Each structure stands twice: as structure tokens, then as C-alpha cells.
Length: 257
Image (cartoon, rainbow, N blue to C red; front, top):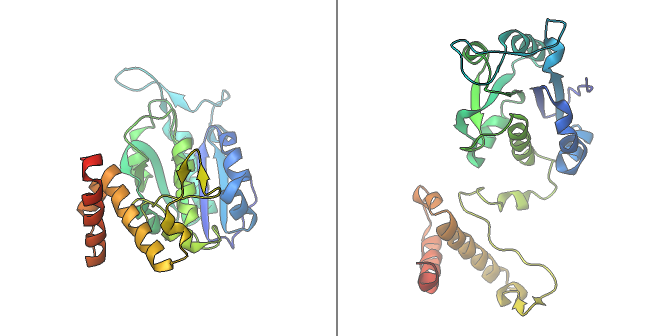
């Protein structure tokens, strides 16, 4: 098992039958760097290590018949108890298509839990008694079916870790990300200034920071109106934002309506 650094800001313990799937996540990118800095800690429990039979099986046929297999109660229960012994006061999360849809606004609440145990289900799911007796929360990353919970765990760990202080150097970039203020991000451009007869908007070359701020805010509002109008329904716009969005709609009405 990976050594536990008890000075980390948040701990993830993952119960899975395929711990090797996570190799790329923990070795590269911001997650790998955050682990090296001991900002976050990720450990794995191979569910087969908790099987009590000589074949190391962790699944069985469902009562009542039906297709597929279910992950059994006993190995999952033993794995969860062991995980809890490593991380006291942990929150046990089962990654399931029946769970609450994971959104950006949920991340700050999850960060405060500090110690999270992820159960990565496989096959047709897990014994309901584990959910009733051991699971604190069920989460889903979308209304679709995955082969297992490992990919969902990676998504949640990446999204949560990005908001932990020190994981990403530039905090301003986090504040401007899509969904951070219930708006999509504004368009970004880099060099060269013109390519294939497509040019960077002049305002971004002006050096006028106030005009750039207003342009970016208007584009953010406009892109949200075009692509995700549902996000605007519950958002209270300032007087400035209302004016910027009104002007954007007026300018682009024929194009998008």
C-alpha cells in the first residue's frame, strides 16, 4: 500500500478491483504534482485482498435471478472497515448511476470532508445492504452507464483537487473556469495573431484592461446563453451583466435565434 502522509490536506482512499487503472492519474499532471507535494494523498485497496475464499472472488449471482453479477457484501464490508481504520471520520461515497449528479457547486462541500473513501462498483452493482449500512453518499458524474466506478472516481478526484490551495499555482485561473460562477468560460486566444485568415479580437490586443474585462464577461454571458441557457435561469445578474447580455443577444440574434 502507498505510504500515507498524514500532513496532507485531503485523503482519497479508493476501493477497486483495478487499482492499476489509476496509474496515469497519480503519476502525471496536477494530481501527480499535488501528491509529490503531499497536498493530497491517494491510496488504494484491492477488493480481492478482502475476499475470504480461496478463489478471491468478490461477486455472486443476484437473488431473484436476472442477468449479470453483483459485488458481494463481505469483501466490500471488510474493505470499508479497513479503510475507516486508516482514515477515521471518513465519508464513504459509492459511485453509482443512481447517485446525485456531481456538479462544480458541490466541490467546496466535498473538500470540507477531508477524508473520502470511494467505492468503485463493477458488474450490475453492489449488494444493497452495503449501501444501506455503510455508504454515506451516492454520486454520479452523469446520466449514462460506465463499465465501473473507476473513471467516475478519477473525474471527481481531479475536479475536487483543482480547488485545493496549492494544487494549481494561479488561483485566478480557477476563478475564471467554466461553472465557477455559474457561467461558461470566455473564448481564449494565443499566438499567432492571425492564422488561416482568422484574427484575434482587437480588444484583446488593445492593452485596455477594463475593455478586456467587459469583453470577456460579455462573452462568458453570451456563451452561456448560447450553449447552456439553463445555467442563467437561477443566476442573479448585476446591472452591468444584464446590459452586456442584452447587447450580446441583440448583436447575435439573427445568428443564434
